[in-house]
Image (cartoon, rainbow, N blue to C red; front, side, top):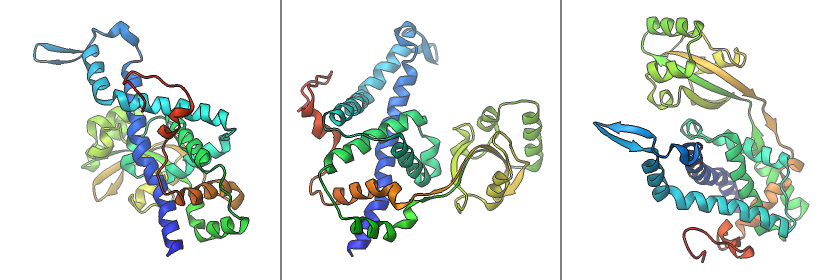
Length: 301
């Protein structure tokens, strides 16, 4: 029973990341994008409805009212974790951060991946989460035997397969696929064609982006995956007939699979076991009293 519980909790951890990270970082990315031109374009119309305009200022104000507190809280949490890490001599290496990112990416489904923020934003949030884990488990020790036993029991969780980052255009007929292929060969944008032509609504709205697909995935048509494996980054396939129509797939990049050794993930396992022993959840807000904080939304307590 203890082993089953530990296994379930370890598998659940990436899902917590998915929920928290995708929500907050997408909000952050959205606000950063619409504010990138500063106040100079405040009166710029971002939409028209009949003869009425919606200005950038109105848009930003609505975003601030709905999401401003959560995004500001996320930014404060990042700073609090960084300063607390300095105060308590806690650090996270680039290797650890890349490992967390690799393991997170391997468990995301297609819908998650289609709405991912950029890698830099995602890694910032992962860094915050890992620092928090280290701070709350810094003084907990487990024997080498316990940690190795845990690793052996859950070894498959530390194997990240090779992954293919794909986009696709799905059309109904072979003739349409041939037409799309001809436009691609005449330098039309794959992303634009996916938005205009693809009948797969989930990926069409993202410019055809499918996301990272594991080499052993059964969530994608086998013929599409086999075609992807034969491509070089930047190449697209010939039309592939599937149950949903005819698909042209574009390969963006391939990430090589890795099997993390015990030494690679020893610290991660130690943190996971320590967190399981906590009776009360600890969040980054728990450390707000470690540094003086004032913010737009009033008292921090």
